[in-house]
Length: 116
Image (cartoon, rainbow, N blue to C red; front, side, top):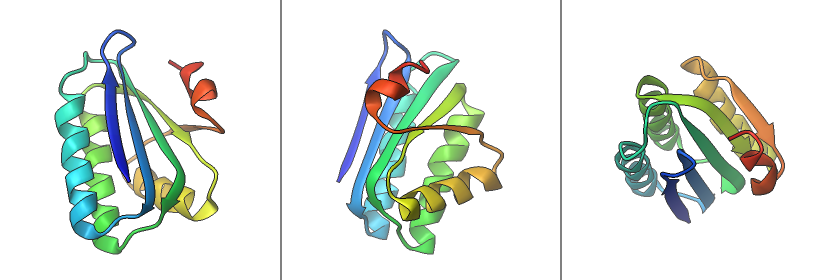
């Protein structure tokens, strides 16, 4: 499952990934994140919900990192991750750490909005 939405008024992008996503699905997700993020003003926040995400392959991890790098280099000011599963958290944490992203971890969407 892939869901990507932007809130232009509050200037954030919401990304929700669920289940196991094949490499082509991860590529679609990364490209959608990049295209949607372009609609926001510099300083936007990124909320990623990985509570139901199952880790993907190495190629999928590279797609995650591609989207993270774009967000980092193109105006995001804060990364907020909604986590539950240790496995999903580990894959996103590893790819973020490799490119120097600091992440605030929260337990639900309402808590994430408090960081906007």
